[in-house]
Length: 374
Image 1 (cartoon, rainbow, N blue to C red):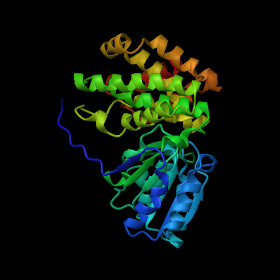
Image 2: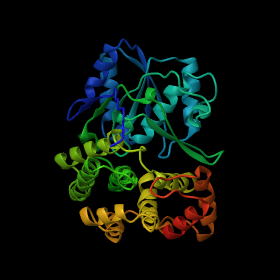
Image 3: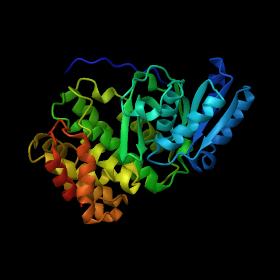
């Protein structure tokens, strides 16, 4: 195992009936006014908004609202929220939603304390030196953004979807009540589960993995492979929903990189970002397509991880058929990507070259992987 330092300053409150405590926690740190950031209807449909707003009012905490975060969140809404904060300052940013909402909150929290355009922070042109604190309520599990220091934001003007990270982006508090996720559409639950699995597989196929970590990865993959069918059969199975939620959090909260030489390969995510950018493909769907194609290609150069995966989890053909049985796409054709776009996708992904650890990818490798996915 390689040396590592792991620090997570996030308090997680997990379980039924905990959302009304959000106001108590915010008031306890002396906050008087906060910004609520939400997506579309899920915060209302799940009951999260009603519980959060009532808790804030009970504790005398004023709030302003930013509504409309989309999957694959855009920098435009981030800029709008930052502009509002310049007029109406707040003490804390409170995301109520899934990973896209948390990612937006992180960008807003950093941009509110930066004198320039927030895209400079996202691109890494300027360091993140100060942020507003984040205390949130999770309504959709997938990305682990509720317990990590990573966010991903899209900029359609520059044709970029970029991840950025800082120790200052960890939420101070995340409340995870699995019951809030009862109302999620099945497709969203499936896509979120595949996203969580991909976070594990990006590390599984890193290329230099200690046995302890392999064993951790396999436990989490088996958990998700069990939970998704159980939730498809019964969306209100609390035990399955709770295990699905906590598995998702554990898949990308940083612990699975401890002992690796890198944080993981994450080439598949770069392919997925291109699909989300051009076609607004849900992140989980982009990964159900690109992760198997990437594994198939790179395993020609380093077969050992796939051999272990096939023995202990499932073969690559079975992985694809499993995704398809859940209703997820496994080819670009299924999301209506024309064959003529293969070059465009490859060019966008190639902005990150060289990339990869199991196999360092260049432009010609990227093109072959996209062809496999089509």
